[in-house]
Image 1 (spheres, one colour):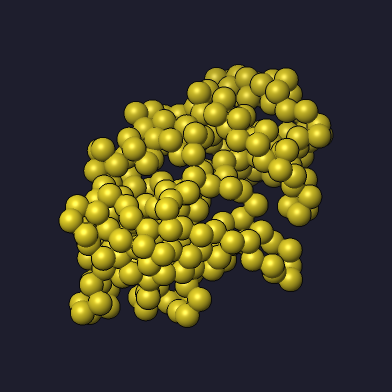
Image 2: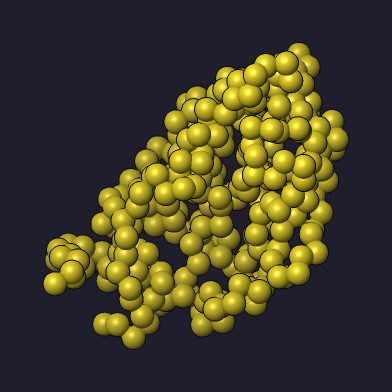
Length: 261
């Protein structure tokens, strides 16, 4: 028998989640089977609902409360996942690999400035990785970040960024020292959307997926937009990609349908 042995207290929590979802999620706002049918109206409905969920601790339940997370356990997260799937509810839109990266490498000030608004649903982030030339070879990055006093000036481009969601920031590497060896020549930056000199264009893809091309033309960011040291970007990316490839782990919910009791 591989059934998960939920406790009475956990089943009570399940009831709270299920009741809230039933009372707050109209049928027309439930997640469609085909993401191509996900409308702008649905998107902005869920952006607001995510803020409400964050207050309850359910948006990103296992992250610390001091940064806007729920401070809950993996068992709570599994129950939330099961009930959200049952109800057709949409989870957070952000690229979640960014969260542990800022947790590990960010200063306390950066965690409050960048991580907290993501965990509370106030902002959404994309990951900014793929370039037109190098593709997935992140050690051969061409986009540049040049120090200018306490600021950085960013130039370059990326492709296949984001999804159907809009975002208020994006996070990823830039070349900070072209004379340094590979793996010692990158920085990892937060870039605000919009920013002066930043151009975000929709890509017309055959599959219909919503992706964007990013063009940076002398985009200026302050020094606190750099996460980690100015040549530690590859190491910071190691944390980012470890979680992208499943290294973070998470409670695995059982399969559940909307007809389950």
